[in-house]
Image (cartoon, rainbow, N blue to C red; front, side, top):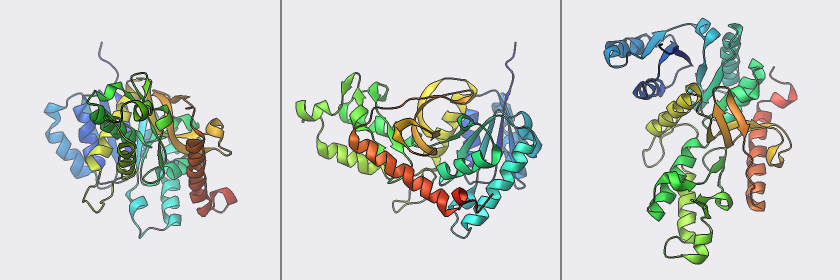
Length: 317
């Protein structure tokens, strides 16, 4: 018996849109993808020409009505990266899209793929009324996987044997959780005292600097890196984890209410079990005092960004 096709709706415009869809196609998911964008016709036609090679997945034009029975809505908004758009304009755009999405009766998972994604996730939760577990951002999923790969290179082993996390928000506001980083079952920090020929404190500092270059949304830096391919790879992976109900532990942006000693609910990137229902369970790490302090500072920054939009003062409803 053929499995029922899953449904993905892509809302908003982004230069990542087609690359994301192409990456999903490579995963050979049995799915229907709908593009909600007036300029998507050409993209749909392009994918249609190659439909012989991706018969399990169909790509279509659609309207917001397609959200009604969607499993996942991928929420793009390139205006969030455009300095010519004001905060108020961006909030208005988000509100309009969310209202149209929810008017259909949508009850699926929202994947936020924008700049300032944790702030946008808070807006979507506010305007949609969806449970927090159904709204996710890419968070530090990319930074965490890169972290594991680079540690694996230092020790010349498989990344699958490295267990470590990057938590926080994005760019400079990230925390490599060295206190909970392990090689197999052995703490990585123990190598500093026991085997300095294999790893030094300089190695850890250099790796931390590299991690802070990774944003939550692609942009061109001084090296000319846009993070486009790496970002859509992670977004497609997260899509697959949800559609296949894999129940994997990922460091994605989720709403944290009481864990980690945070005083107010805030979207922040921490390890969580992700499946078909979105966030199945939050895994609270036992952080060091310094890591705990840093996480609270990052959470405060995110809350302050929301305050700037007057969300916590009733200025924008």
